[in-house]
Amino acid sequence: MIPDEQRAILNAPPQVSVSDSTAGRFYSPWQICVGALLGGPLAGGYFYSRDHISFGSPNKARTSLLWTGVVVICLFAIGLSSPRQSSGTVLAAAVAGMYRWFARQAFDETISTRRNQGWTQYSWWRVVGLSVVGLILTLAILFLLVSFLPDQWTSNLQ
Image (cartoon, rainbow, N blue to C red; front, side, top):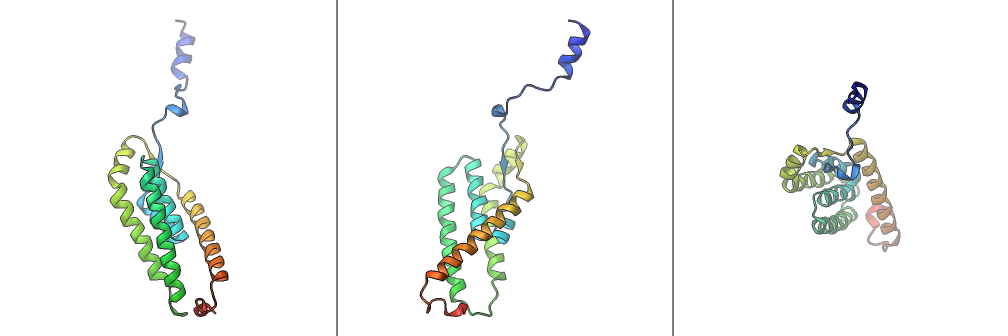
């Protein structure tokens, strides 16, 4: 071979197709916790279910989304029945902590294995952005719910 050709081959970038890549992305338990704290259970549940999908468990992802719906309904009921002066900070922190605990139980070993295979976590910017979307969706659902509920159920809000 001619020396220039050898140099060109050695300096060429690797020929790896994007579809051949085995590395993926995941949400860490802390990201799921922060997502649930900023965007409510809708965001936390979304991140949690996406990890199940990324790790090959679509049925668990569906189940987690159903449980997220149950959590949202329960929190709306608690919020509507609680006194006007009460703060939801402790409840929000408890829900976020619950999502983190469940994520650690479900994903810690898998995340450790996948990191060794080259997987990386999603960016914090993505988590914050999607959490804001979750918050907006939660507020929209709450607004619609309060708009259509009878007045006696929403008397604490007025």
